[in-house]
Image (cartoon, rainbow, N blue to C red; front, side):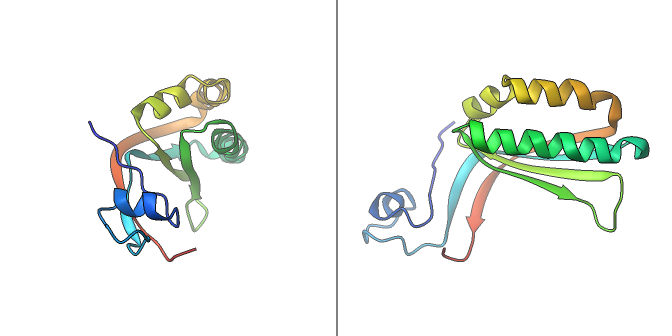
Length: 133
């Protein structure tokens, strides 16, 4: 598998990775990572608040402590429901595997297991389309 990382506003280097030879980043979209995932959790109603605290702690630690974790969004379903979605982007599969081995993930995974009614994981590649910073 080949991974191509494009960092917005990173100058000529990013532009060449995005396929442009202009020396400036004119493209506002590009492949960010070929290793992203979407996790859909349905939480047992009596554990929603405890899960929310734990998943936010895990997300913050992932972004702060893992160089290969580019993004970790926690989406809380609206209207309020016992449903959460995680959107995570890693530089590559090795970075994701490193995430799974971290102490903060292991603590979250073990603690949250009995709170989960259903969990589905979908892996994907990411093409970012964003406004310039």
